[in-house]
Each structure stands twice: as C-alpha cells, then as structure tokens.
Amino acid sequence: MSVKIQRPKLPPALLEGSLPSTFTEAEYYQGHNVTDEDYMYQTAERLHFDQLIFSRVSFENVTFPQIEITDVIFDKCNFSNADFSDAVIHRAEFKQSKLTGANFSGAALRHVTFDDCMGNMAAFGFSNQRHVQFSMCSLRQADFYESAFKKVDFKECQLDSSNFAETSLDGIDFTTCEFDNITISFDKLAGCIVTSEQAIGFSKAFGIVISDE
Image 1 (tube, rainbow, N blue to C red):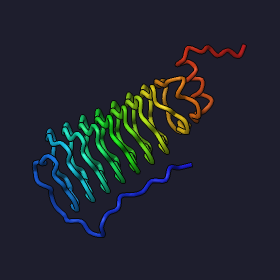
Image 2: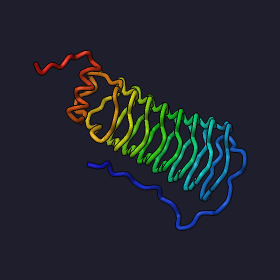
Image 3: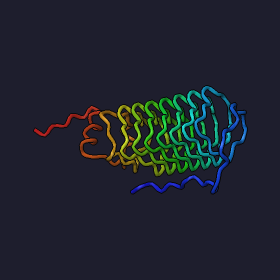
Image 4: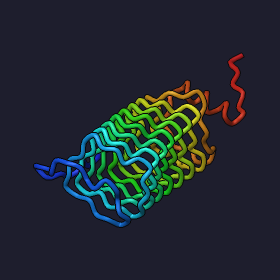
C-alpha cells in the first residue's frame, strides 16, 4: 500500500522572480516562484524556505546546514554535492532533480517525495524519515546508515550498492526495486518485503549458501 503524503501547501499565486543573489544566514525566504537561477557554492546556515517553487535552479555545492524547508517544490533542480545536513524538511517535493552526492545526513523528513531523481551517492545516514517516498529514483551507493523509517516507500528505484546497515527495514517494500548487492544488518531485516530472488541475494550477503540438490 502506498504511503500517504501531504502535498506542499502553496497559495493560489506566488511572486514571480528571483530571490536575492546571495543567501543570508538564518534569513527567511517565502512566497516566490523562482526559475533558471544559479546559487552554486553559497554557504549559509539555518535558512528558512517556505512556500516556494524552484524550477531549473542550481544549488550545486551549496552548504546549507540546518536549513528548514516547508511547503516547497523543487522541479528539475541540481543539488549535486549540496550540504543539507541536519535539515528539517516538511511537505516538499523533489521532481526530476539531480541529488548526486547530496548530504541529507541527520535530516528530519516529513511528507517528502523524491520523484524520478538522480540520487547516486546521496547521504541520508542518521536521518529520521516519516511519510517519505522515493519513486523511480537512482540511488546507487546511497547511504541510509542508521536511519529511522516510518511509512517510507521505495518504488521502482535502483538501489545497487546502497547502504541500509543498522537501519530497521520493518515494513519496507523493495519488491519493485533493483539491486545486485545491498548492505543490510541481519538483526534489522525482520518485516522487510522482498521478492524470492531478492531474498536469495540477501542470503548471499550473510554468507548463506543455498543448494537445491
């Protein structure tokens, strides 16, 4: 069963145009529709993004630790190697965006969707995720080490070489996902939903030899 996700709550109309070219620490940004902008390599802590739409915007290599994001849509944006560590993200959508090497470690995610995103080598370690969906995302070598999941959904994702060590997979359904190998913890595996083929792959990860002879 699909996870129920609350969509971003946006006003009927947003202001068209750019935000300031340089973000300021702890500043509050609200109510804009921002298109085709470049904020690469900026650094600012404790930013607040509220009721915003970003389309084709580059946040590549930004350092925005402890950012708070509420009711925001990111469409075709670039977050390559962005640092969003310890972020608080509530009712947000990431659509067809590039998240390669992005750092969401320690983040709290509530009602967040990642749809058709490139998230190879993204870091979600120690994150706390509730009502989160990853759909048709490439998450090769992504790190979910010691994360807390509640109502988290992975649909048609590429998870090869991803790391779920020390993360409880109770209720997590991997049946539509693809992977040749994945790192998991045996004592956190109970309740995980997999295909028979995936179960054989898991057994190999723990050194179990299956023989039908």
